[in-house]
Length: 364
Image 1 (cartoon, one colour):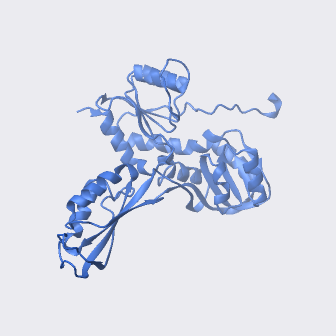
Image 2: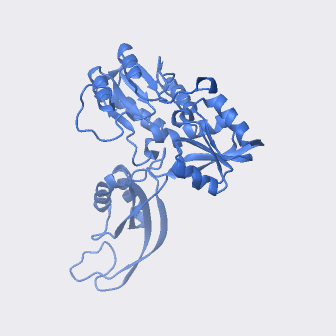
Image 3: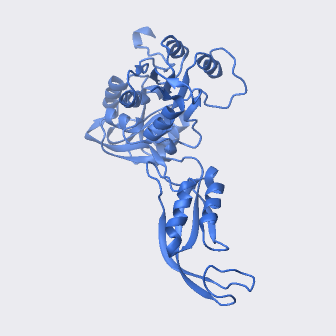
């Protein structure tokens, strides 16, 4: 039986941890009919005019792209070479699109880990939290015998999801006090008397878009006439966009840059010198994370003048092979992961989106 676009998009979201994507990132199903069938799947780094042409020529039903195509909101889809124009072309050709981007960056084995491996890091650990969609923590206080029932209701409404785990809650026992009025109908205790009851405090995180539904489910399942609860805005459970570790042996910055050029390609820019052993890497545009790591040198793309100066002032060197080059090891791993999930996956990751052209000294 042919799988649907919607089911495959959901499978890809679970496989690549879309819940860990940065809040600003338009990941997931960007366009396409969720009910349409999928026979042919392709993987690309980014949709360019050349990629779009090959997708349509090959009769692809679904493309899994590392980069988003529609990165910012658009008000029209008119044929042309702009992102909106390319989206129009793919939609007209029956091609749906799923984006993984920062979700794949931060996941174990994703773009950050692949870049760390390409550079030769050992004992790599994460840094630079990439904060996801707004979340809140819903907290309530329940009689011990009703704790499971209330937590189950909150789970079914969408609370308690952390990465690949569901039904996540924290529970602590304590004593709740209350004095019911003469009009109250307490679940337990006496009216006009200060009552002390053994209760369980339940805490569960949920996306802000589900808070109203979770609170309604919690109140409906709660035995109390007037349940006590709090909704607290949080920043929680972020993935890490960078990796930091060590080289087996110290290297001069210039020698490390030569190694990276041979491994990744790209137009290499270098700021700083000296021997280095502690290395940090960030795939894509990592300039804003330079000062969040503990390293002698940072390898990332799109570093601007002021970011490089700030790094040098902090005692760090910078090696910038370009945006696309730092993502290439990850994109190769993305194709391999999708190919494991789906038969006959078409590889378009060799159609590199890097707009820059390398030139040697004899050409200048």
